[in-house]
Amino acid sequence: MSARSITVLCLILILTAGFSYLQHENLYRFYMGKYFKLTGETNVYMDKSKKLYSEGKHEELNEYIETLITVYPENYKLKQIAGLNYIKLGKEIKGAELFVSSLEGGVIEGRDLALVVRILFRNDHFGDVISFYDKGLMSGDVNMAFYYGASLYQGGRYKEAFERLNYAHKAGYTGYEINYYMGLCLEESGDLSRAVFFMERAYNENRRDRDIKLSLIQVYRKAGRLKDAEVLFRTK
Image (tube, rainbow, N blue to C red; front, top):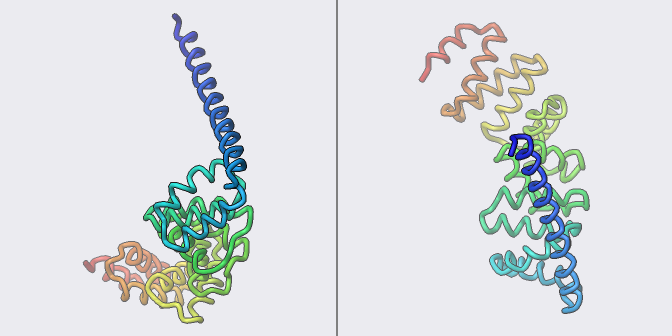
């Protein structure tokens, strides 16, 4: 058999396998949907899911909800509960990503949303955090303002980033991270003296962070403080 024939055969097998999988998935969803309707589960599955979650029965809910997500893929509230449940089980990224996938159906604001955003930010899912910001969710929350601002900086939206970070700063959000990101934003805007001020604060609060040190050296050089940059460069 020629190489070309083998390639064509492999493509046919791959396409056939993919089609078979989709058909299997559709059949499974169809028959399980009929089963839930016949047993009356269709009318109670949301209440039962919420009850199991509120009672802290996360392992039991996990077993119950896996099939439901397949049968009811458009139920965004179910996805949110499932996502939060994964987080409770220690599967933070999987849970946060599932929660994000429910955005098209609307999101309930509150402590759970803030938890999801924190997980996404800590795992560098800045685009997902920005998607919450663009929907105007909890924009007045101080913690969310920091996560939004830092993520907007990562997304190259520097003006909006500084506005959110400055809001959080004035509202009492403290720590090396917000000083670091405010310094980066001010550097982008050309306000080097203020950029140095915030970057120095960040460095003094966390001297072990190499990114902060390198950023401060860069700002020193841009501001013409070459001696300060040299001294810091040689500092261990």
